[in-house]
Amino acid sequence: MARILRKIAGGVVLIGLAVVAGMVVPRPLSGKPAIAATGSREILGLSNPIHTDIVLPFDDDVVGAFGDLIAAGSPLDHPDARYVVFGWGGRSFYIETPTWGDLKPMPVLKALTLDSSVLHVDVAAQIDLDAPGVQRFSTDEEGMDRLIDFVRTTLVSSDGAVQPIEGAAYGATDMFYEANGSFNVLAGCNTWTAAALRTAGVRTGWWTPLPVTLRWSLDMLN
Image (cartoon, rainbow, N blue to C red):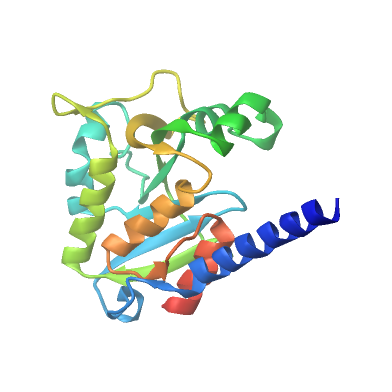
């Protein structure tokens, strides 16, 4: 029993060290972070206790880049829309758990093991930029183009058309789309958000599986 407890304790310590290292070891290891630059394009990061999103303020480039989402039914062209919100995640948990009250065992099991993925796209009329879960970053035109390309390559495309998931939405302003990649607990929504930010030139921790680890790494490294 003592040996088993020592092994468990050792495993917990190793996991803790990996999480800390994942926050403090920068990715990329060198280079000037875009958050310190005076880029003309703004990116927002949104976080809650379990999930993070990428937010882009609307302009002609963003609307043009995702015009096919409008054709698929997404209200990106709503006159009150000022932001578009992108979030990647496991299909079962993301679609079937709009609130904690909807929590079920099977989606949780798939989120902790392996699941196919979806991209959630929502629009917002306003976002409180001073809210605790909001982080602001700046990048240049090239960085924004790379970020848009990253989001686009996340979307599954068949004959040039995105694939909306019928009947999957939280409300009137959002939609789910088929996405590339498999979701698992070690490489989930928060590592996707980190990868998206890195394409725009924002430095993140090497491995940030939780919203809190991503937020801390962004604060420390930028």
